[in-house]
Image (cartoon, rainbow, N blue to C red; front, side):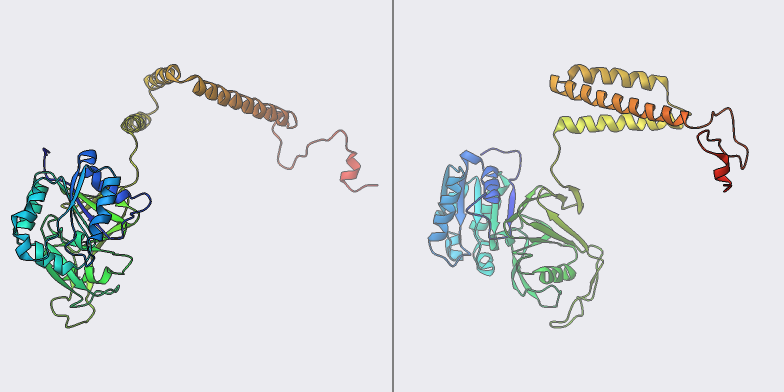
Length: 376
């Protein structure tokens, strides 16, 4: 497999859709090569038997992968066995399932198997995981911890990860299991690390330094680079002060720069030709503003606008021309009606050349003057 750099990383928050749209898993298969994808499923964290491999094998095959195999090292001896490592050397995608996070870390990190995963990623393979498989992608992974919204001391425990996502901690089932507190407590204790919380059926897809959100939920990011905290002296299970943390809640289609720690874009992006049209319109507006500021609008502007309008009319389809003609007819009819009403109103008023003096009354020929004065 030849690529121009490292492959995509998929940190999936768990409980990804396996029955309907399967959007997150589909994205992973496409990143792994689509119809040419050779995927290795690693269910080491799972307490389930062969069924977990069967489920993901069927899913990835249904989504178009060329081949799917399961490799399950159960201990560090297995993880150093060449027989377990060989399938990774041919993989275009490696997927780690959910389960016991500490077990996954204890078996994989620092072994030949773990090194083979990082080498596969470096040559272009997509590497992903769901739940526990998402957490191990970072350099430091959450081994276990308590739920809750308030950050507290000793709320969670860290273990070593694969280090594929640098400078961050990844948590999963984030909103569904109320894991705000434990991730925020870790950011308070290590402000240099970004806290990344991924909702269920959602993936934080990392390519280089850019993170894109795919799926049904959101990715929450805590940036503690300017935090004020008492984490260095809070004892036991005391609440931790976390002031000045920058919060980013990123729904699907959002893109975030992990190095600069800023939002790059969000929402569906328009086609390239539409972006070019918008930029041209903005340039016209800037030019017009300058001309207005320079004591009026230049005649050259009107000439240019007329030429552009002519080109747009020439390029318009018959349907668009018909719509434009209809709008013009309606506008002309409305203008004529307005002019007619203005003319009638003008006839009922005195001439503009005959101003009324203060207190003067208009004469009404059809009215008896004596009635106005109350005379019988």
